[in-house]
Length: 134
Image (cartoon, rainbow, N blue to C red; front, side, top):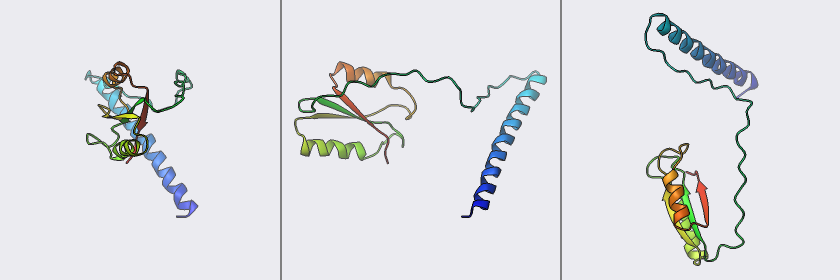
């Protein structure tokens, strides 16, 4: 694909994005003027505020005798992906002294799962490998 065509497609995409924002704003304004219920519009603009910085957990000195949770982030839906199962099989074959627990995170890959984090903490999970794979 040549640069001119790429640039043209990019401009078309940006134009469509701007127009959709304008249309959404007009709909919200006309709903307000008519006395109908207002809708909430999220601004996709990037904020200048930095996210809270959380330090990484300390690295384990060894894996032997430890419990690792293999957490599938549920990126592809309820069935998860076979990657974490393959990792669990690898650990069983190559590092049998490492206990692995395979878990599928509830909700979508972007939602929190406090019950899972609590389970890991209460059951003595020494480490977590989280994966998004296909």
